[in-house]
Length: 81
Image (tube, rainbow, N blue to C red; front, top):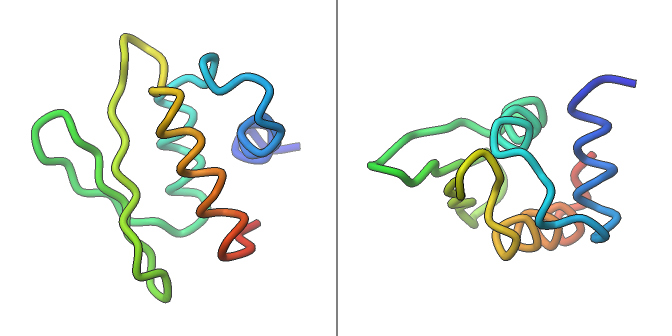
């Protein structure tokens, strides 16, 4: 199983939103076809066919838990992966 798939499984489980590494979340989004642009500390991801933006920031080496939840909801809404 690829790293992005392990990260996706962890994100989708909803059991460890506070323990998702920021670098792993970024890598997962890129692996699923999102393009990244960086504005200050904000990492903004877009993907063709999805009108919503994904905006994530790190909190130390971890992703912010509420943003992990937003990514999970987006993946469910658009059936990504």
